Amino acid sequence: MRNAAGNESAVWFDDGGQDAYHSIVSNLVSLAGHVQASLKLIERAIAQEAAMGGQDASAGIVVLDDVTPRYLKALAALKACDAGLGGALDLLPGAEATRSLN
Image (cartoon, rainbow, N blue to C red; front, top):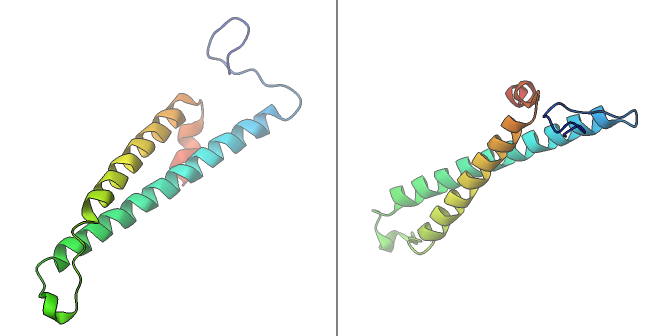
């Protein structure tokens, strides 16, 4: 929040502004955690698909080569989201401490 002078210092009101701020930071940290978990799942799926790529189709294994580009697009989108969330948290004063707890 900017105060009337236009600087970066936060102005808190008696109506629970501090609690609202902590709730926002907590939600952003939680969302970043979910995005990072999704990144790991997609990376694992890509690795598994690559490992299965060399197996014989007669063994009943279906290779999903057409899925890999969508995985990669989703991975790129999630990485951009993760970077954006990290940037947003870096801009919030005191968010670093909350971020390191999760």
